[in-house]
Structure formats: C-alpha cells, structure tokens
Length: 340
Image (tube, rainbow, N blue to C red; front, side, top):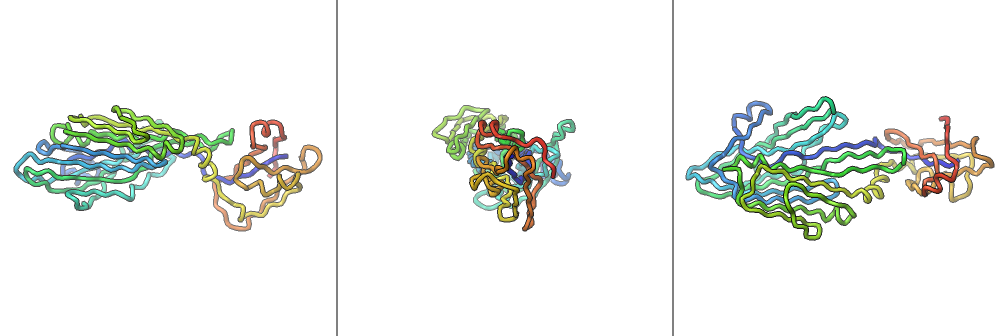
C-alpha cells in the first residue's frame, strides 16, 4: 500500500478581469440616480495626450494613467469626472473588493471621490454578470488652460484555475485584462492628439511566461512593450493576455495546501523503511510517499491521524500511489477501496 495525504483549500478558482476603464466627463445630475451614471460629451475640453502604463506582476496589474486636458474655451469649466472599474464574475465568487490603492490627482492635488456601483450584462444562463464601480470626482479647469489628471490603482487580472483534477496536477488558465478607451472619447472630438502606452511584463518573462497584446501594434523591448500614435481614436480596446503556467505549477501547488505537520499525530501499522515513513504523508512533496512494510499487498495496514491542534481546511485529498514519476505510479500498488 502506497499513499499520501494532503489537506487543501477549495480548488476551482475563478477571478475577475477589468473590462471597462479610461474615465470621462459625466452629467452631474446622474449622481442623484443611484447608479445610473451617464457620460456626457465635453466638447470644449480636449484630451491632448494620454500616457498609459501597465506593470504586470504575477496575477496583479498596476495601472498608471495620465491625461492632459485642454480647455479651448475662455471660461472656466466645472467637470464631474467618472472613472469605471469593471469586474466580470460568476455566482460562485463573492464580489471583489475595490482596489485599496486608488489615487486620483488633478493639478498635483489629491481629489476625493465617492463610489456608485451597478450590475450590468447579467447572463442568467452562465450565471455571470459584470459589476461596474464608478469613481466619481469633480474639478475645475480654468479658461484657455491645460491641466493634468492622473489616476493609479492595482487590479487582479482575470483567470480561471482548476486545482483539482484526477492527474493531481493543477491546471492554470491564461490571465487577461481588457482596457476600453471609449469613456475618454467623450472629451472633445473623441480623438487624442497623442497616445503613449507601455506594458511592462518583465515579471512574467522571468518566470518563463508568454504575453499577447491585441488591439494595436506594440514594439517589444525585452519585456517592455511600447506603443505611440498621434491622432488616436479613443473608440478602441486593448487586451492583455499572458500565462506563466510552468512557474505556477512548480510553486502554486504547494501554496494551496495546509501545512499540518505540527498539528497532527500520525500512527501507521508499518512502514517499509525510514525513506518511506509516516512523515512522508504530509511533507508537501509529491515525489515521496508512505509505503507499508507488511508482507503481501498491505490490505490490512492502516493510518491513524489525530489532530492535536485546531486546523481549518475545506476537505482532505488523498493521492493513492507513488507519484514520484509516471513509472513509479503505474508500477506500484494503488488503493482501490479505503474504509474511514
């Protein structure tokens, strides 16, 4: 009899992706409608430049965006500004928390904002919906002046991971994020004089991952992707898709397990030798195993586990075999039935 035990958390993980961003001017009256935020064209305020920077670090994306706004009128303008952060989620996941590091600055001064939240694009068949959070702020731009508006925050990229399958090898999906430029098309004529975008994926490349950018042509400078264009149409989208599956398989599998070596007392009926002792049951190493030392097939052997400290876990998984390699798994005995 060869066996190994693991205590692991819930194993199917589905997280959200930002699918709408790049804020724009809004009707101030919309703030009274409890979520019915409507963008409104500010024809006399031109977006003369946008600098957009993404830094991808594992499953997080740090976003920094800087706008240069020009008031073509000689009169000052009171602007109600609405910036959306979307999350596409399903009913199996709780709604994600708002990023904790949001900063909105205008003319180098930190702006206060309040939050309006709404559910849109409800898909009852697939049990999915989009939660849209509007960050609402306001500022004044003087006549014939050009001012700078900056926003920074960090989101988690969208992905679906399956960490529970019959091969005992977790399956990690692609990570992705969609940036929709269209809310900014409500400035001026919907065209920005200059658009600069950088996507820093050094972290992913160092982990042996790959990256795909869709929506525009980037220049790759050793993991730093650059895009620049004049007269950029803001009715565009950028999709960032990446994976670092090998790294996650090698490192992520152990991180999902509960280390109970100091919380349990294990007694086994026998073991083959010290290399295959009961300590191998919970050592978080798939290349080791407990092996019974009885004659025959070990059908009368047993494992007794006593929790000597409180442990919180979702369920227990049992790997019934020697998983050091495909050969050791197939060539050694494996459990067919196990009374608990």
